[in-house]
Length: 481
Image 1 (cartoon, one colour):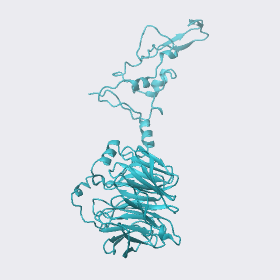
Image 2: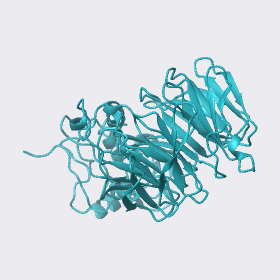
Image 3: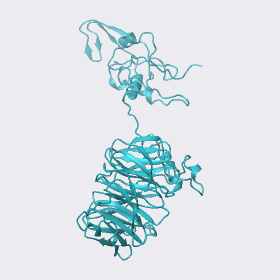
Image 4: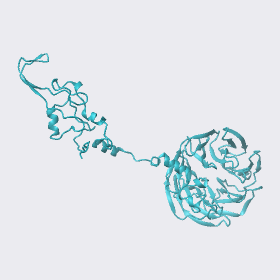
């Protein structure tokens, strides 16, 4: 069976794939250039053009109102209509009249193709399109349905661990993924606390962006949030796993929908935001601290400041709610002679009163705090190159016999964290290594040579027992198992 459309891949076409216009080329030149090839398919696009009629003109003969001065021949082809079909063979008019000429290739392109026949694309146009096509980014490779599924459904790798009894925490040994995630230092990373969505990994960077990653399987970037105009210093998940709370050096804190990326709440502070904390009993309330002597409690429903906590400090480095959410602890950068009164301060959330300011008696600042998931205790990362253990009950005494040493901080805001069962305490180091400690004995379990630059944060997976995410000062994220 003969095909209805002939596909010609020869290089005899013009740059735009069009045939010469009939009004500008004599018929003899056209037929000579085409040879014996029929450049118009008579089976589909109409009959072939008729042969031109030559008429010999004599001296003194009157033609179209003019007198012939010397003998010559003129070409009188049959007229064409706009459809490219011969209209009347009895009347002949000069072929040079433009109203009777059409671009047959254009007409052929706009002709409706029969079912099952692909439209014709010139060869040079296909080659040019293939040569200039850009490679898709990581976000373009995933359509909206795929991204929505990864943001809302359970990962197949996490599903086997969603039992009532999570396994005992273990120390990772090998690297699973390495991602050049940001163009600037990463300040923090955090797994989603909801077990069904715990494959999602949050990262906040000094490049003004916050990103969501598929940290359990593919390592693909699922969402990028660029709402801040300054470096993002801190970020955290909401307890439901559907929203993000971010704080930036642009003096703002935002609540963003994870799936749609829409900004839900934006509040402006009069200081650079360095730390955030969500109220455990009321997730719509959160605390903001930073380059100020104040810590503000915001209500996301009204976008108003509910409470203000004032202290004689220059800036707040970290905020941690204690068990029950009735009290919280702030860390400051005070290193003066009487810094024992302001390094760590415990506050009553409801009354804004200071509960205790005699918690830490050494002249080191504490850039990060972490709460034990099962015991009434918390640890403070000290710039003295150790982590100190404190009681979460009044009067918040420090355990002087249990100190986690062996890593270096050296002025970096290195974050630490516990495993879900509380048996392992992990921290980064300014040397790029990750240190794992036994929580009970404070002995070193393992030291992982993770990064070339300072390791800023360590996040242990809330469901999978031996999966850890780390990030460094160079913008790299690595997943270990």
